[in-house]
Length: 246
Length: 246
Image (cartoon, rainbow over the protein chains, first blue to last red):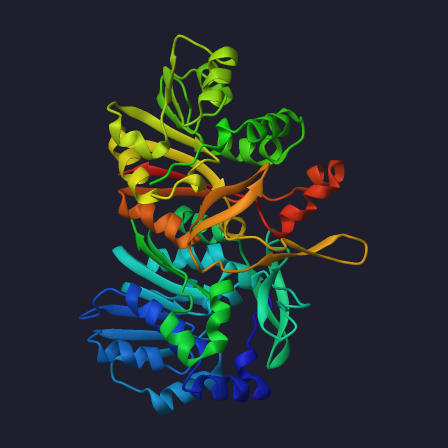
């Protein structure tokens, strides 16, 4: 399996850094609050963060009282930035693709993954290992591209009216799962589309019970400040799942 | 709450009857097989069928060995047809909107509902009563319009290419839940759109665990025989859920 590591591509890394440094972005407005709302009280927890990137979340989890955090990421550049910005005696960074966590031994109370799992082809394999690494009753919280978003495979994304206002999100091939190539700072970013039912059924088959789902959409307050985010009423960008090892 | 009973409208009832009598329709090809795949072994079960219509399913459940079936439907016309076509000493038909099942007392091993729950405004209320009427460990299987379908509130549904082939399903206002009016044989058919996360979270809150989801899409075999159903690769018509009372 050819594992993808765009985050070590110079163009990608710079574009990504600029995006995340913008004060107002979909992550800050939607993904982070929705994820935080699904997290249990972090005090004393041993946490595994899959696709930890520059380690901002790892550091935040320690600030919130986590006992320890292990951050896993495929990208050397990301982990260099993490060690520079977000070092802590209770954080361990491991360079490894998420697919390789079968190599990890350990025991965690919480596994978190933010917007990384849609890059993973072997979703079932990752779930099996997340389940193995969790204590009984342990929690898995992750966010991913929303299935109506991850189904996108090129072409137009929106239908606009004569004033350029997005009126419809264009949905196609939702029922055809698997690899998608798209352009995000660089060409050929590979992602894997899975239908909503597959995301959930594979979790159940791996030994999880579903506790809560979240599809953050726009709010009146946000749209008043940032009219562009009205789009998220038409189609949420993210799906978040809270599941528990049974 | 004004409860809706289009099935007693003459135009609606005739249109609906003709649709269901067609040998090839989305129900026969997709909804029924997907629902049957989620059902437990019916032998000896006491079953409640919410929105039983003309009772075809009630009769089929008896044929499969169910001990008894109670069929609930709002429509007098539908239940007249049911009593004519699908009478059995072990089937009881009750004329009642699904929202009124709080009036029912009884104990069921299985509650089934086929393509009716998207007409219900008070989803939480129905779930609460389904849960109450089930034995512990009892199963609830239902099908409904898929959320990317139920979000439709008028306007265009598809973008077509120059040859009239549907290339994109048009999605809008998915994030805005609530009433939708549309035309299906008659004007002003009222349905209620709920996001995927609401469908699932409300079940969990009502005391169910999620066992399996299903989003039937086209298959090569079906598309070869009925090319029109290629559309379902772009957007499934139905969502089906199997949940268990915990």
